[in-house]
Image: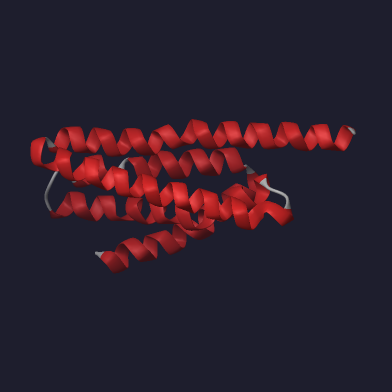
Length: 146
């Protein structure tokens, strides 16, 4: 199952990377929405649901490994990217820790609540990245006009 998910992630890296070159907004939206479906499908239970969910997990990794790096690199000037990556991955790791604790607590109480939490947390990231993208473009236009 891990190999299937990883292979799906490899394919998703190529597809999402190509889609990002065409439209970063569309690539990010598609990647996040699809990966947010992972937990609700997986938590339905059974082998068939796990097989259906694994490519979505791979897409989630593709979003993290490919799109996030491209987005951060595109938002920041070259001399500030190291700090930007450090800040992003520090927040990402802290969020992962807090999310894991919350998921562990929810798992004991309700898998439906767990699935809703996971999907909502992933979908909540979308407006943040779209706003950051808009602000970066606004700043770029402002710098060009000066």
